[in-house]
Length: 139
Image (cartoon, rainbow, N blue to C red; front, side):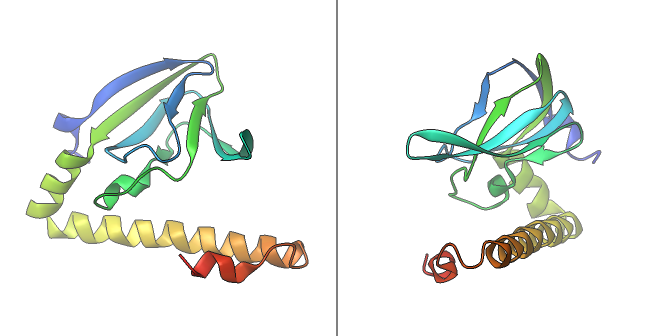
C-alpha cells in the first residue's frame, strides 16, 4: 500500500452526488474512507439499487483493465462521503515496476469476478430461469 500513497488524493462528496455513471471511462480506483455509496444500474431510464457499500470498499475495479468503462453507477447515500482516489495511470506505473503487486491485484480481481458469477448463478437458479442465462455469455 505504501507504493500507492504518493498517488492517492482525497475527494469529498455530499449526499446524492454522483461518484461515477455507468459507461464513464474507468480512469481511477476509489476507496471509501467514510460514508456510504449506492451501486445502481439504469434500466429503462430508472435506477435499480444493487447494493450499498461503506468504508474500506474499493469501487471502480474496472480501472485495473485498460480501455474499460464503468459497469455501474455510484451515488453517495450518506450525508457526506470521503474517498481515496488512485489514478489508473499511477496504478499501471506501479504494476510495471512491481510484478508481485500486479499479480496480487489480478488475483483479487479474479476473486471479485468469481464472486459476481457465483451470485449471478444463485440468482438465476432462485428466479427459476426468469431470464436467459446464455445472454451473459454472448458478449
